[in-house]
Image (cartoon, rainbow, N blue to C red):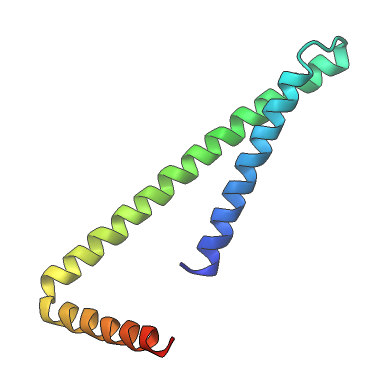
Length: 102
C-alpha cells in the first residue's frame, strides 16, 4: 500500500471519528435551550450529514478502484500465465530468503 493510500485511509478514519464525536456532542446537548444553541445544532447536523455522505462516496470510489485493479490483474494473469507463474515463483523465493535470514 502506498503512502497516499495510507494517508487517505487515515484521513477517512479521522473523519469518521470526528463525525462520531460530533453526533455524541449533539446528543449530549439535546436538552439545551436557546436560539443560538438551536442554530448551531442545526448547522452541525447538516455538516454531519454531508460528511457522512462524503465518507460513503469515498468508500464507493475505493471499492470501484479495487474492483478495477482486480479485473486488470485477472486479465493480465489470463493473458500471460507463464509470466505470472514466474513472478509468483520469484516473489516466493524472495520471501523464503527473507524468512530464512531471521
